[in-house]
Image (cartoon, rainbow, N blue to C red; front, side, top):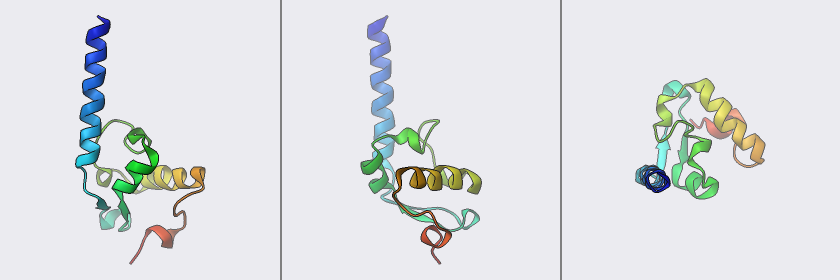
Length: 93
């Protein structure tokens, strides 16, 4: 039973990691979210924990809401004291 659990866990981690590295380097969020672009590769390298942004597993952040992005992204930047936190720093024209 433990071997099966270990194999399943290893498969899940591998699949999740593969999805993260398959994502484009730069991600541009749609205008409905305020036209924000960020370096996904840099976030992956810096955080080393995909669940910080993808709490439910791999998925497109662009499908999330503006409120989610403000809470998650801005919250993390404030907490880590690193990265943009003001409107103009994220929402470039």
